[in-house]
Length: 229
Image (cartoon, rainbow, N blue to C red; front, side, top):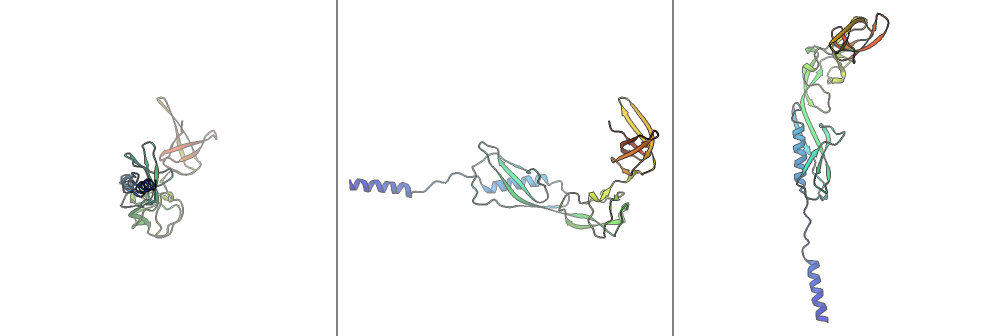
């Protein structure tokens, strides 16, 4: 009995002490590569020089192997600056992870060459180009984005120009006579009225007609606005 017990103990010891086969896992490098490829494809139309850094996944995270990796931009995330790229496994059962990503875009930004008051209509001499980081959407990089537009408020010298600082050139000015047009099936009706506010292209102008009715219309060209159906 003692010999049999000893043999059994030796057998159990061999089974317990033998090598344990690790379960197969998804390569972290492949997940990171999928996130990087996605960020590169989505940012290829950004202006300037783009540099992308994807933070490695925590080495302690274990994920099942997957043949169908799908990278995506999470809801609310932006494809610039510090952001997040998601990678999910479309197999069943699946999983998803989010990788911290830093997308830096270096471009020539438009900056004010002098202090300018509200209402200034921008000319080429009013701004210059300065190398900098495109840290958020809306920063201007092309002179054509600014020339002829009007400042909504005063800005200082060296200030970076943004889209929300500018308004389109005024096509209708408060107090001027405006032609109102209304389109139907095969016909156009027009009448004149007085503008109650300034408006640029595609902006809404309020117009008082001869019978004192106030109508809101979309500005389409100099002195002309269309009533929306």
